[in-house]
Length: 122
Image (cartoon, rainbow, N blue to C red; front, side, top):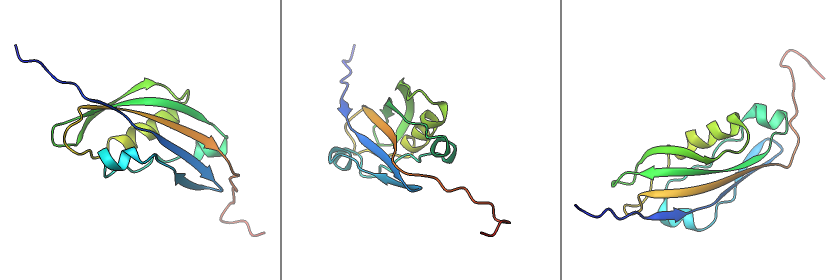
């Protein structure tokens, strides 16, 4: 029976929103192991209702560095935020080597959303 080596990475991504702009502040580690790591969106409805949360996501990585699947290890407490994280993490690309990565993500509200109707002039 062949022994399977499991490599697990701890990476962090902090997602902040300021006045409707998503600003990613990743640690330096993701760039080393994941050269393509787009931050998750902060969904409009979550921003509108000031929904915040933090969660941990387990990314399963194929030998070629592509993501095979993503699991919610610890929910952010919001299905909308969890869904945004899953969508973004499926797009990540890793350097060959690691087979799994734990990604903590935090959504923190720091601004205000201005809602305007296109037919209204102010």
